[in-house]
Length: 234
Image 1 (tube, rainbow, N blue to C red):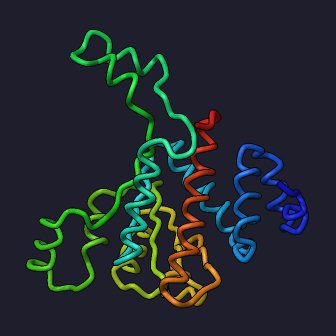
Image 2: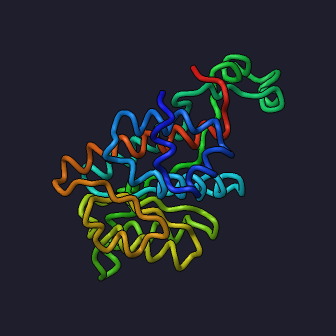
């Protein structure tokens, strides 16, 4: 992989990468495959830092979005909750708890470490109760987040146009709680970019094109977070 891409990055980004060699190759691959996304490297690294700090302090990553972006949230959660590109086998200290339990050896051999990544909006009973009992629209994500989120957690909100009101309400709620916020959106940014602590704006406007670029961004984010904790590739 060519190093020429690194030389063109801002100095502060180059210094960060020099201190984190495990993620350099992943980001080089990202820039090689989608050079138009090079401008998002800096906010991508900021997002990585926020999520790692959160996990290091026993926090949780919350995700929200609508339609295709909701599906993207599920996709991200799926990559976070089990191994993605690297092995996450249990260490001996965690295998010990399975000893002498029914099927304990099978489970200790099969289970993998995961990161706590929670998709908002999956509880349809809660959603219907909010719609019926609270006379404010677009409140579902915010109410669920207010009940489950804690200071130090992270919210990643996805909106292709940046103006999804329920995602914006969740962002505001997250900030009130004391959570870090990341917005993944399109070129215009919309309200989401204004609300987020870190805004990742991909260079596209049409919904499907934005979503295609989002896939590359969040796959890379999942990969570099995983590489921070796990060294051995599959």
